[in-house]
Amino acid sequence: MTKKTRVLSGIRATGRLHLGNYLGAVRGMLELQNDPRYETLYCVVDLHATTTPYDPKILKQKTRDVVLDYLSCGIDPKKSHLYIQSELADLIAQLSFYFSTVVTIARMQHLPTFKDKVKQYPEHATMALLNYPVLMAADILIYKASLIPVGIDQEPHLEVAREIARKMNDTYGTDFPEPTRFATKGEYVPSLTGVGKMSKSVPGSFINLTDDLETIKERLSHAPTDSGKGEKIPKEGGVSNLLKLVELFEGEDKRVHYEKLYTSSGIKYSELKQGLAEAIYKELKPIQEKRRELESKPEYVDEVLRQGAEKARKIAESTVNEVKEKMGFK
Ligand code: TRP
Image 1 (tube, protein in one colour):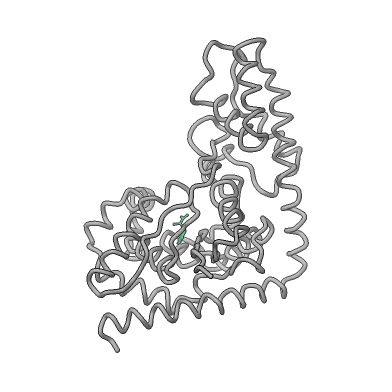
Image 2 (cartoon, helix red, strand yellow; image 1 turned 45 degrees about the horizontal axis):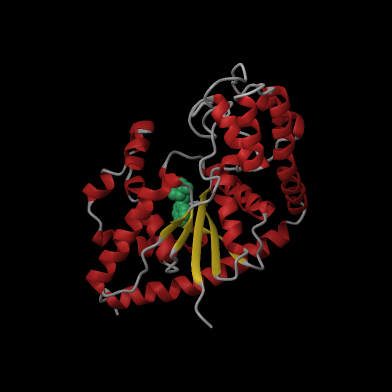
């Protein structure tokens, strides 16, 4: 039997997921979980959540919310190992320290993600924030995972993980793989405002996984449109974003159908939005039902997490031991 390719991904413990997380990351995780060529590990990264200001009183709840959303969306504990990062803090933070011996400060300071966060929270340019990508590399390489389903915004972090793998291998003779990104079709989920991408921090931009049909319709009703007719299909803005959402939820044919209308008799946006709202809700309804079911089974969820962490720990321990040996501690 050939060895399965190991897959790892994590979502920050920042509370309930929205449609952007679902399409951008979770759908990719599901695809890989359901393909027997892969062994999948998925986690909630709560250590990473402490690299920007956060409230310790609700961290646990936010972590739990992501766990429940993962399971509601179809992460199947029979196929994937699901765990909370801090349950393995002893091993992951340890490995991240070892990795920091091959990373320069300058390299970390120049990452766009670091610069953005420093701009956002000038009082919080902490060591933990600077170390964010190193910790992420430890998340991945501790399992020698080589395929990572994450959004395109994470590419700079994966580049760091590859550099760390190479440097560790060159310096200490380890055998870390260079992880690559697994791109999902819906990795860029456009904002309902017509500008940029769907984001929790931009009001009116997103749809929640908990939204009912009426709420989805309401949110879509504010999405900007135009006269519905023109010579050229808009490449950006409200209409372009709506067409992208149509493609993601109703398929490419439907998008082409609307594009043809645009250049002929015209699109009736009330109809487009009605159809789109229904298609989105159709996908969300089973997730919402599953979520309610899981909320009533806390012991089951605890057991899933216990088993997930146990499995992850076994692999992680062996990697950390190997690194300690190669680095001369043993
Ligand atoms: N940085 C990722 C994000 O913000 C979260 C993350 C942390 C992650 N560790 C990871 C993603 C390991 C994939 C693999 O989305």
